[in-house]
Image (tube, rainbow, N blue to C red; front, side, top):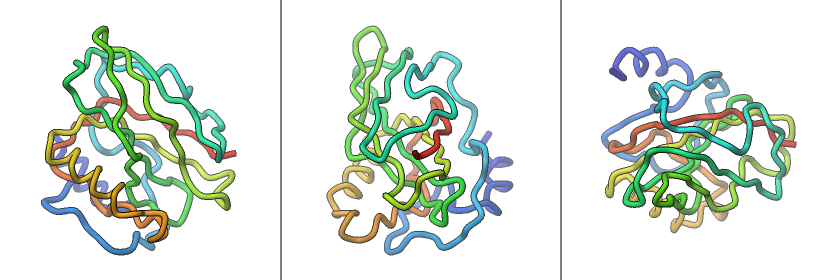
Length: 170
């Protein structure tokens, strides 16, 4: 299902799925996809906030919505720049919380640095298996701020996209 999309996406920035997580610095490729290329969102997944094309602040913003996910699912927000010079995947520090009715709320979210006002970012909502979730936790534990937020050149295997939204940094 993803094969055709991945072949096309290879021209636009970092790899979307790979066998291993790339380390070190972020990509210097300034060309990024302008639309989601990880797969079709889940029709039972609705993002309440932020709304599409919202302006979000450097100080962080709320993310919430409704789904048919279970409390046992591991829902992560991972963003990547669309119009900035680093299109690597940036996992947030922790997964979202999912209630028994499927509603979800995420820890305060952040995109880009202080110099990135006016840039657009795509937020990917990903359900991760144990191995993929551990890779996101490992990235957060690696002190990405001290390393200049290199991000991931590719997403780990074991993630399934359930939604996405594009926002702009104030």
